[in-house]
Length: 222
Image 1: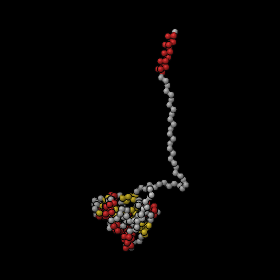
Image 2: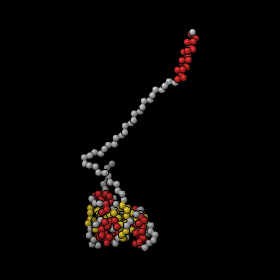
Image 3: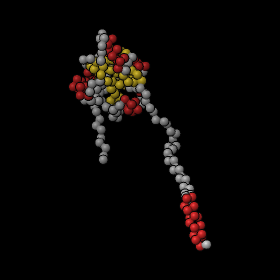
């Protein structure tokens, strides 16, 4: 079967206007189609902690945009505490809604949400781990475009609330092989040779019976 060509997505004009109207310094990066943060890092030759991951979440009845490094996962209990402090709520329950809810709330297709909460009229909560990188790459709402800018400018632009709610995830990297070396083939173990069965000894009773029979015949002849 022939492979289907993936359509390239355009840079949303609303995002361009959003950034230009606010006068924030940024750079638009155009690249091949990427769907995951790991793929984006490999394509743009960036470290995982330089790629910002944006997630649409619901805390109680309100929606938020959570931004953290691509190599981090959310610690939901810590995120609940962070949002609770910002909103003065004692009990906060955080969950990730389904794609259909996101599409209805933000009026965007799945996978085309940007990392800029102001564009979607959502408050932004950012993990402090992203601040360790001077610059970061943020989703532009396109599979073929990203926005690179200073992290501090992003925080100021979005008036992002900061917190420690990210936990670094373990990423298994394949072992590197030297160029020109062939991978070792797995050899199947040889089957063990079966031991030859010893010949069964003739039962002693039969031989004894035969001897008795020959003796009787000999006695009759006499």
